[in-house]
Image 1 (cartoon, rainbow, N blue to C red):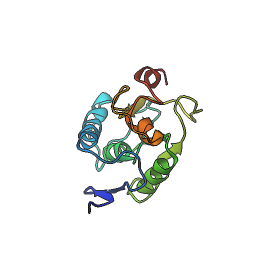
Image 2: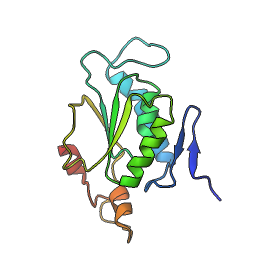
Image 3: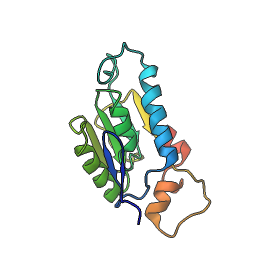
Length: 161
């Protein structure tokens, strides 16, 4: 039987209650975000993490899932990162993953729909691993369609949000 978690060097992602599990593409995307985003706002390297540049108000992860992208970025930046996740069980598990990490004091996940949410702040950087499918290969389970398909969030809606 496969593990219900995915172990990284500095943190663990539990995913037994999450709709969308850790995958190769999410790990590659998270590594790219963690490497590239600090280059969007170049700073001299600081150890152990880069500080968000002056004037950068924070980072938002739309569709935070298990918290994977947030945690991978938190390894490189020392600023606050917020996430929003539409699936209640997934958002709760993401917050548990974050609280168990070394960066739990500056990361926060809220349960909600980005299309109707009132966000507490303006963000200078927004990351998202959006739904993969547009109308194909749907599941009988609505929560899976929200996570994997454009059933609740189209690319146009994501860009508008």
